[in-house]
Length: 126
Image (cartoon, rainbow, N blue to C red; front, side, top):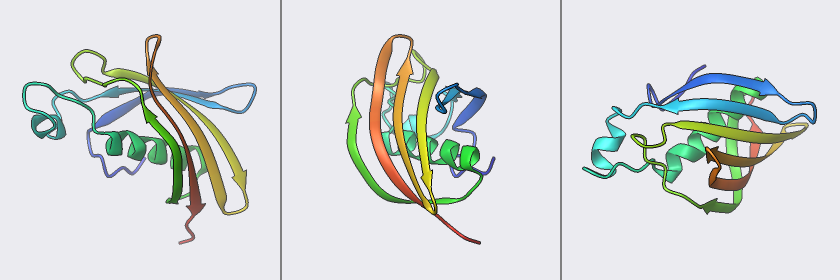
């Protein structure tokens, strides 16, 4: 899997559920340089990085490079501290229609929902 967030996270496992959703378990790298600047002594996973992880996982699952068209209902509901909660579960409800890909995401750790968002991508042709 090609990522721009080199060594930022590791995809531990994923599965496709009976209803067509993908469930991905990832682990954040608490020692990544991003956390040294965001924020020193109180590391927080940047929201833009979480959005990029959703994009990269969706690209993996649909087998195509994607371009973000729109993002709506982006709600960050809990702080993701990589030292306290490095293991995240992402549920991706992916709807492909030609070159359009719509994704509803819920990211959580334990019983806590950290992020909810709906995004729309366009498939890129090579």
